[in-house]
Each structure stands twice: as structure tokens, then as C-alpha cells.
Image (cartoon, rainbow, N blue to C red; front, side, top):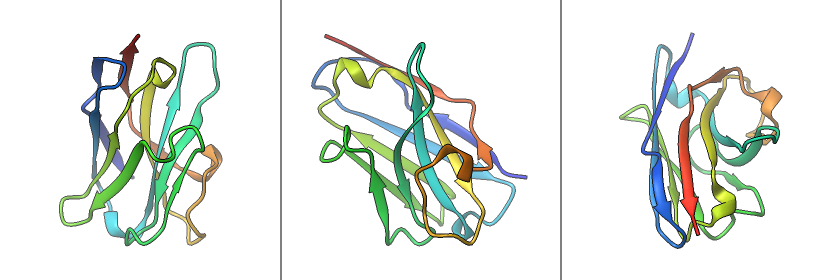
Length: 125
């Protein structure tokens, strides 16, 4: 089992920045890929960013490329999502997730077995 706890969400104005954190416990964090997803009201959960076990590979959705940065600190069992130049369309509940498989880092929701409870990000115009 892996437990994930997200933090760092909030209400900001367009153009502002936020940094989300996801603390993991329960298993060896550095063995697993980590991902961030988001779900806006009335929409399906969507991929945002992912990072490989050692942090050598990062993937981003086109909508956030150049604005968001995913990172991880394996010594702290934590992954981060730095979000800059936020837009109203970034408003959503943000979830971190763990992929425990031996596959390469992936972008699909079904690849991730464990999920946090989510943190709300609201961007006003």
C-alpha cells in the first residue's frame, strides 16, 4: 500500500504561481513513477505531468508545457508540481498518483494504482 497526501492548493489570480506537494508513505518511493492529474467540474480526470523513478524523464500535457514543472525529492518521499502563469482553465482538483509497474513512465490514468485525496486549485480571472 502507498499513502499519498497532496498539499499546496488554493485560490489565486490569473498569472500567479502555486507549488503543489505530494508526500508518499508506505513503500519505497524511489522505485516508482509519479504523476499529477487534474479533474475539473464535469470533466474526466486528465493527465498533467509525470516523472520517472530517478527523475530523469518528465512528461507534460501540451496545455501545461512551459508553465508547469514536475520534480521529486526521493530523500523526502515527495513529488512537486510547480505551476506558473496560472490560467482560469487550470482550475481543478489536482491529484498525485503512483505507478508501481516496471514499465516506462506513462500518461494514462489506468497506469497509476494509488491516488491521493486531491487538492483544489482555483484560478480567478
